[in-house]
Structures are given as structure tokens and as C-alpha cells.
Amino acid sequence: MLTTPAKLRKAGIIGMNHRNVVCIARNNPRKLYPRVDNKLLTKVLAREAGIAVPQLIGVVKTQGHVRELKEFLRDESSFVMKPAKGSGGKGILVIVGRDGDDYIKPSGERVSHLEVCKHASNTLSGLFSLGGANDVAMIEELVNFDAAFDGYSYQGVPDIRIILYKGYPVMAMTRLSTHDSDGKANLHQGAVGLGIDIGSGKALKAVQHGQIIRNHPDTGKDLHAFHVPAWKDFLLLASQCYEITELGYLGADIVLDADKGPLILELNARPGLAIQMANGIGMQTRFDAVEPEISKQRDYKERVTFSMEHFGIL
Image: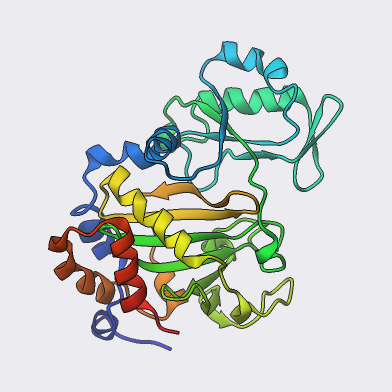
């Protein structure tokens, strides 16, 4: 249904210009960007603060390290290789098994050791990185995803994005991959955005291609039955990231490991706005609710308690 900019503002919907000029420029000083744009630095900061993240196995920093990969990976049956400064999921290589000298991707496709080395080398040259700058290749443990989300995604595994405003969780969503999105979590490529109630962790509304849907288009799963287990733990984990980044407008992407619980996958200084559609509410109303609370100097647990009490719908 068509609407007007005035009606959108009244509903608290934030547009792209406001996001760029106010949410990002005013709240996220550029000098702090490396804390989230460099995933290796993010991981170091998180580990120092006791924030749960996937274990780092190694870092490929030079072409000499590429030549050492065969011996280094000799006992690793599964791992994830990713650029430290990548964006949009580019350059992430997931290995779930081995067969002789070959590696096996989640799709079953075989990858030779030479191809893994080429991927690492391309990563060093900046092929997948922001601005094409030279980079390093991080090798992380493969997350053992919890079965709680089985059937809610096609090929890919759901992660939970939580938007923080000055340390307060204000909105959440999971992105569910589909056949249309080629197993990727990008909404503009056809993934499903499923809003999550801040107060309970229960599903709110699912959208795909801008349309509200009830069932996953590929698996048929009832999306309204989606419920994040141990939801408060997700919020506590996300809220702690404010202290290590000092970014006022921050997106925290979290996955649920079957053995280790919620883990921070990555942080984003420029989170998008589609989360508003999946929640059926504008973020500005929640930013306005947080503003008077900032002077109270709450810790991350107190911020989560406030958000769950004030932003829950169900």
C-alpha cells in the first residue's frame, strides 16, 4: 500500500538518509570503525572482554603462510576461512569435511588444497575486502549449529541480528536463506526477514521481497512458531559489545552453537533498515525511548532488563 513520508516519520520509520547522517555519522566516529570492520580486531577485543566468539584456529598473513597451509590444516576436518576486512559475506569459505587431500563444502562440492591456497592468496590481495585493501585470512572453528532452528532456513543457517542503540537492544531479526537467495542471508537477494520480539525472543512477522509471508517458501515451516531459546543470553551477549566498540548504532550478528551457546559472529557499524519491516515498527520510537536513559549509566545487564521490559510486544 502506498504511503507518504509524513506517515512514515510519524510511525518512527527511519529512512536511508537519516540512517547515514544521524544514526551512523553522529553515533559512530570513524576512528572506531576498525573495531568492527576488522574482524580479527573484533575477535581480540571480544576475547579480552570475555565475550563468546568462535575459536580462532590461525591467521594467514603472508604468502609464506599460504605455503604452510597443508601442514597447518593437516588435522583440521572442518573450518571456516574468511577475510578479516570482508563485507557482505564475500570470501567466506566453509569446509565441513575432508576426503584425502580434498576438502568438502556444505554443498558436497569438493575443493582441492590448491584451490584453498588460491582462496587464501586472493584474500591476502584484498579481493574480498572493503576497498580492496590488503588483508589477512582468518581460520575459525566451524560452528556446530544448534538444531533448534532446523527447517527454518534453506541450506544456510539462521543468525540473529540485534540492533543496539547506545548499548540498549532495540530491535532483532533473523535472516533465513531461501532457494531464491541461493542459500545466502541477504534480504535483497530473496532471503526471509523474520522479526523477533525483544521481550520474549518469539517471532513477530516474516517478510520476503517486501511481502508478508507465513511459511518458509522452501521448507514450508510455520515461521510464526520460531522462538529463540535462551533469548536473554543473546541480548546480554549483544549488549556487552557496546563497551568494546563504543559505537552508538551497532548491529550484532549472533549464532547458536549446540555446545557453546550464543556466539558473536560479527559486528556491523552500518546495519540496514529492513529490520523495521520485519518488526512492523519504526526504530526511531525506540531510540527516543532510550535517549532519556543514557545519563543513568546502566551496565549491560541493566540495559537488557530495560529493553525487555519496554520493547517487548508479545
